[in-house]
Length: 577
Image (tube, rainbow, N blue to C red):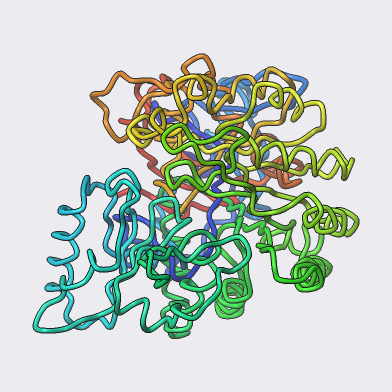
């Protein structure tokens, strides 16, 4: 029997990520498609594989504690785990004594596009942004447009203008420039981009805003659905079918390289669905499984809005967790508000710096029929809510639906009012949270925008858990870096992964233990999409999806840890160089 000594490595089961498959949105990524391949794979041995002499993290059932084992056996023929326990057990000793060899096979869209966009995440002010774009434009004269990502709102302090992105091109060119905010809720365009979009005569879409100057002309920034429903579809239309497939492949490669074995997609739409289906038709299946939420926007009429829900129901009828575990529609996604840094998060009290209040994108009257129709059809409801007013809207809406067994969920929950914290557990609402957003280095404007008092109870993860809310921990790509180990570090230390020298903490009273954070990222995420009966735990009979991590079991050491291998259904599909 093939056996494998894993030394001091730790094994985590089924790391998950909220990763929307937008073919035109990008992430900061250092892995290229050529580094990995899912198709150039030697046919694996059908003999079981033993991994031992390490720490096997076992996220146990809700009735039992988390613990460590020292050995695990993977059956490649079934893709299942056949043993988890002590390597001195007679069964394991006998298995390891059998003939075999160490298995050394090196196997191995949104995300792929990151390789084609300029990352501005580290640029601290307007001049640095302009200089970076100027250099990038000179280096890429062949590009029809200059596409950027990672613009951090505090770096420009809300004073962005199209003219600031004009004149950065070379050789007399005036190419369109598109800059996505790091939170992906706004796009900043130069004059050429505004002109080619033809936004001057457009009305603000429901749930969005085209920023305008005192003369009534677009000034350069497209907020919320003005970005997602105008800018992004336009750029999508400029991609070839081949480019879309390249983006799919690069995204999948990137996910397994950091230890994800499944994806909960929170922004599925027609173009993304078609691209992924084409990939499946070509290669047979996806290398990791995808549970997708169909994105539903407020439209000009209730009928148009509900048509989106009906489309999700149609797809769910054919592609669901019972008929297509590897790739299915699990629910719908509602965006209730924006983000704090752009001052588009919906708050119950005004922003501290300008005394302005922002309302949620949906009214309760518009939201109710959407939630009722989705729930009645067996769809899971996921709701983006960051500001406390949006969070209250989401909780009230799900309370009216009245179906705790639906495992409906609220994403982010960044500024939850204290009185609403216990309501999640009482109503069976999953708290789906992304620790990367509480990195202190990314919150430099929050005290000015919200005031010290409100900042004192943001991101209350431990309080959610204490009051019985199911916790699911993930990333928020492409709005933020998606390395799960850095995510775990922030969740447990409440310190910065971007600035390792900083000792600043974000509401440390709400920190999770390392075991609780890993369990929320594995078992909790699997449970959140009804997959806990097959993945999310290293358990006999469960799918052999796991990641080997070189690390010490210490939250303080997580930033030095690295993913060494990713295994899916008993096959090693990624190994670090």
